[in-house]
Image (cartoon, rainbow, N blue to C red):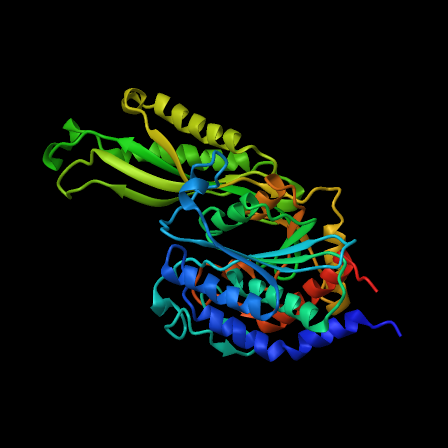
Length: 425
């Protein structure tokens, strides 16, 4: 009698549900903010979990200086003296395609603790079927779903044809260090799913994002005679107006995949620092912001458009014409990325989801950067996002994930592996 592998795998997922929730809660309680020692410690913790599943484990220290010197390195925004790569392989028996499940363990800082309902950003509190905590949806739930999907495949002893790779990466939030490192190490697959929070929708593309810094010059003098100086704060105003107009132009016509967003390619100023004394006309201002990169737009073209807008604003002002604003590019370089039209990954992921949920799916592109672009652009690995949680809750207080979405995602990822990797009977 031929085994019903689908039923066996789904039973294994269901049986592990309590352990899965407990594992996620424990992971959320570990504050793996990017650039901290905990980020490294969580990688070691997960390496042990991978080994306990019987996976072939590659857990290696990243050669940071070597990676950061590469011309296509995607950048970082937090300092790290140490970082680790982690890939577990559930080996297939041959003759099938390989699947990578890729998730990041770094989280952004929690913000003001009092903004959280219980005052603890890492409580992993469960209320009415929802688990709360920093990183709950972005994206520890997705990573745990991938882990327990592989666990179900391993426990079921299903004879897969192709390999299943489980990757846990660091540094996704500030550039993509971990995924870049595993690509440089030679890890590849025939397809990849990143279970970022999508509300279980299908996200086959993402826009990009670039971080910039503006240096606005002024001329200092005593505030009592301010007309003898030039305020860098006042001179920032026409620059801000020019950037606002640039954002409007860049969003006048967008790809249909991102049309669901109010602003598909946001341009925002995140920090402004100017002046050093209340009674002194400020002689300098530094503003930092984020420029959205359109789907299919080269990073160089996006940079050039912002630089041109700033230059035009300077040309229109007598002071800035002779003392132009400096533009610097720093931090993560998030290009856009897109699942190739020739790939069958999207319909296969959709079919796997439909087998375990009657929840309708939408297909859209994300307005933010992700590791999808590294896998598609640098490694040629067809990649999409499919995962539990609402991305609108990420990076904010009371971040959370519905536990029923966690289970559905786990089931669907396991079925995708059966379908894509094949079963050798």
